[in-house]
Image (cartoon, rainbow, N blue to C red; front, side, top):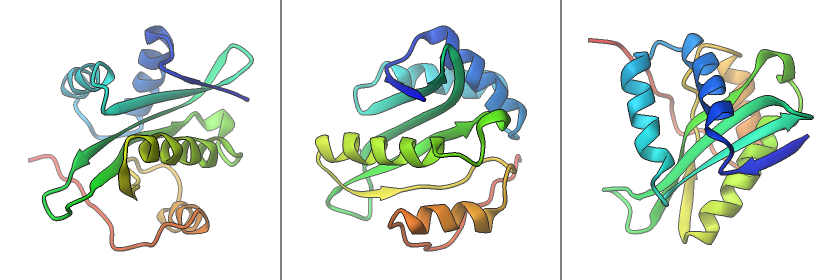
Length: 143
């Protein structure tokens, strides 16, 4: 598996389209937001490739959280295509993101799950194995 920071736009859009199909997000709004993020130096985009085939996408960033003095790193998208789930892609994304966030002076990292794919317990278990502490969960409702 090969990983690229700042990957090409065509593969990013293809993976985002697959991600959106598995989520409840509005496509237009989501793509507009991601477009802004991809040009912001406080965010990173990583794509995993199996040969020339895109296997997964990670987008995350750092920001000043209103409750912390230190910078917080947070994921926006951690998506692995169904064909490559169950391997090490997500684990590698998280480690690369942590390294990037540390290089940007972030002191905390926060991860979540934003699609219905996979068991929440299984995903939380992976995050816990990587040193993250489960502090609750998020829900989303379109209103």
